[in-house]
Image (cartoon, rainbow, N blue to C red; front, top):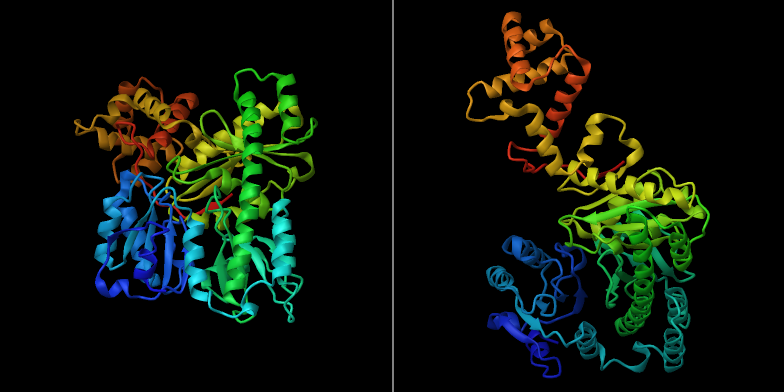
Length: 524
């Protein structure tokens, strides 16, 4: 099938937005569905790329479009099929980027299911193959009955490949490398190795298209041996898996609404113990602890589905039975029950967090957790700790993914980033006052002297040596600092107040706006 044949299919109603004649005659050899801002590692040469454009935002539209389309060019994609439902139309910035990079682009009307497009491509590509190149009718019937009763992926995969004489090795993987299902002939792969296999395009991988599934949770049907099963069979199995995952997503949506009701009770000023106990039962959680609570968010807020990310982190760490939902302010949280609460540690979710965050490399994923809640009455406190740790992670590494444990905030420097930025800015202005006046020529040297003096533990001689000043000059400057701030630098409490103000200022300018920081992704 060529690009022009797909665009000419009247049943789909695709709208050509830009292309050159020669590009329209290019052959399509597959389809990838993605909402990753950098999809290059999952796109193969000659594929049509379907995207709902969830990754695109007007604020940084041109830059985001440039990154996305340049990734398609590097992967040698045949055409971009852009969904119109999310933004009402295909953004002009995206069309312009496609024109610059030579990628044909067409709009997919809101009423057209992506699955209809993929089926059109694959059925055209392999529709003329003989009968043995698809699922046998009896196998298709069994699979249809399994899907109708909402069977899970393990049953579907086992049934779909059982009839093959060589017992094909097949796996259903997430982008983070978690094995969702596998045939009996497939070796057990550690998650990091499975993620590398997907990224390196080893074997054959067919994306599973399912509605209401985040990029963090998306499934991929993978076979190490491309010749182990015919392509049309893989397409049929992937379509059935998509229906299975969509059914699971509908069940999760109900569970997450129940978790949201629990979160609203825990976040209230005074938690209703009876109401919380009932909400725990509604979420399938025990009424007795201990529990662990986590909080998560993407940056900027709303840029990525944090619920899906947190759920995938928990699944990747082998944690079952957790309630995942949203608080009234939109923050995502999870309550982990007693049976698996002990795995919510750096060695548990901390090792999984970077792999899941890497599923959306351009969307920082921040998280926080705190000390265990011994019982129901401790849950509001545990939630507050997790939210504070989350705020600290977002402030510490605004442009990188980071998981922070509240129990590791054991210094003033570690504790302060969790304080809201406007509060830190106000505190800095109140305490340092005239020392922040950029119109004063003496403000900068006084601030430098104060910082050095406190860092030298109040030693006049060491401060003078560090600043290459006479000790009398240090005495003079410190005296001016004391007069301007109303603080006595011989008093420990006043020193602490000024040191805290300097720490708060470290990532805030004099107007209280945060400077950008570059940081590597890490979990602690």
